[in-house]
Image 1 (tube, rainbow, N blue to C red):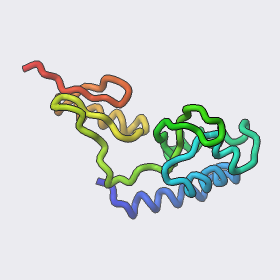
Image 2 (spheres, one colour):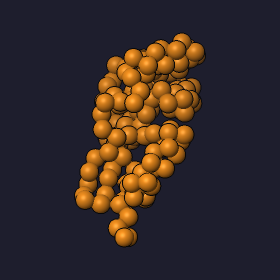
Image 3 (cartoon, one colour):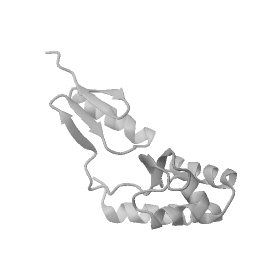
Length: 139
């Protein structure tokens, strides 16, 4: 298991390599621990959306931020996806839905997801999509 100090060090090193606009988007998300929608980030920074969304996407691709829950946007009033800083590594990765079904509580970048998928296969689970894992009942 990765130590929290290692994760903080990686985060600090990565943040130091970010561009100015990426840092601004990140600073907004640091102020909103439950996440913010793209429109909320744009409104807070008072910057054109076509400048903010690509920077947010770059932060997501680097694994610096993650998708949050969908909720009503405070600006547009429409249902929208939120973006937030990653969940603490000490938080559980899975929530038990039933005896044979698990819900993956957070987004995992592809290389780590592949390792997780292999580990879960050994334990008899298959990925169903939409963060749902089901236990194989064949004996």
